[in-house]
Amino acid sequence: MDYQEFVLFLKVWFLERGLKIIIILFAAWIATKISKVFVSRIIITLVKENNKTVGDGRLQRKRIDTLVKVFYSTLKVIIWIVAILTILPEVNINIAPLLAGAGLVGLTIGMGARNIIQDYLSGLFILLEDQYRIGEEVDIAGIKGEVVDLNLRRTVLKDSESTVHHIPNGQIKSASNFSRK
Image (cartoon, rainbow, N blue to C red; front, side):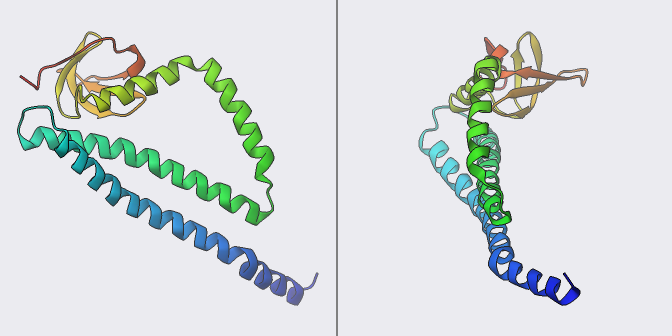
């Protein structure tokens, strides 16, 4: 293949497939930006409508920030996985065996990773029940400190000696919240 044939091949490939890939990537990028706005608005509306806790706006803002962070990051991962799975056929990769293999791997991991699933489910209920938020003082699993990060998998506490503790949500049997009285 000489230079002119190669350039022609690239032009044809770009017009047939490359342009689609660029459009898919751009659409995924736009979807992540738009989803952040929608996730924020939906969560703000739901929290304000269903606010059962009495407190100042600062506490409500912490809850909103925590929920937005968790749901937006989850939605962002889903958007990019869909984008990648849409791009793969454009570069001649058959995704059917990939999806079948992912299903088997998912089933295997699901059976072997009971603790991880338990962590995610516990984290979901922690968030939905508004047990604690980022910035609040809590006692979890015998560790007293400030919640510095919270997601579906784990809770991160910083104690009074500035030691950072990572606690899987599935191991949390009780939580005492000192920030709400």
